[in-house]
Length: 427
Image (cartoon, rainbow, N blue to C red):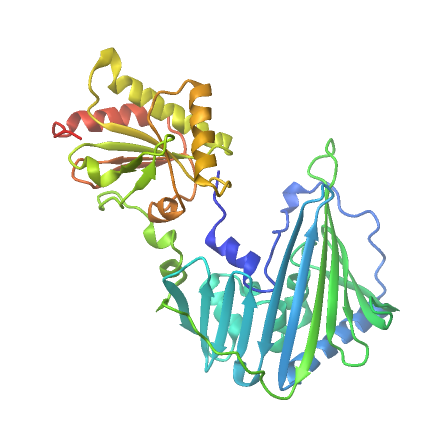
């Protein structure tokens, strides 16, 4: 089970243009929408003309303020929503605020604050182009947002895909029409088609401001399965202003700046390496008793990080159980401490997680000792990005072995390493 990566979190929360749903690959699709229209060249040219005027208006205004809301819904009722506020001013100035992040660009320097990273923020020079800077730092210029792309005068081919949240693949203009808008006034609608569905963008016919977009994703994973559908609706209120609004200062709080995404990411910057000192680990037993790794210095410790909702992590627990059984055979005192550490659970209440983990242990008949992470500190310090994650900590507190996933040779390898270690000095 792969944990959602930091870049994925940023894509979901940084800007209104973030890719909330990655498009499927062609190999995943056995059919495309059956109602793909025949594209009239004149209609297509007219649609691209409307979009070009929107880009010109967005880029020529002294200041642009946007309040964008995105909703994505699947047929089973699952719905995701995000709201983003942004302001773009002269000389590349940008201020973008999402529920979990903020971006501030001034004097050619971009600063990104993530609320989930309490001690650091990203500060990098981006020069004249925020879009290029985001692409260089994050590996995907679409993370800058369709608003930033329009502000910098990028052509429709560059920002349309982002304005539709990458739901239908690379969209192609099919035509243009005038339709009633949500408030009763007419809007200019540019219709689109992509490899995985259809959509449109709506614009104010007088000011050429973008007012919204819509996409309908249809994917058929297999001819024997029901099609997967998703609907995306974006609405945005855009204002063209003469001066920057007040209150757009940058305040990172107690955070200090770093220059790379890896240094910002609390998981990537703590990536464990063989031979390095093990981080501290503070957890609780199912009964609520505290447990700390530092209290067991001088004794090898074998850890298996697992989570209840990922079936893939169960074999890792079973491997640790086999190791523990081998170490305690015939009632002997084990030469190492074994601990299964429950992490990445969705339930916020620790007491509920303790009871659930303990109940699972008893039901499964497992005997290896169990710990429950009290918060996200363990998964951050130990860089737990996937489970099962099995680690051997030596008696001197250094990382001796780390295995992501399941390997048939793991138990034998760790038993061999334990045999070669000096005798344990006690708990």
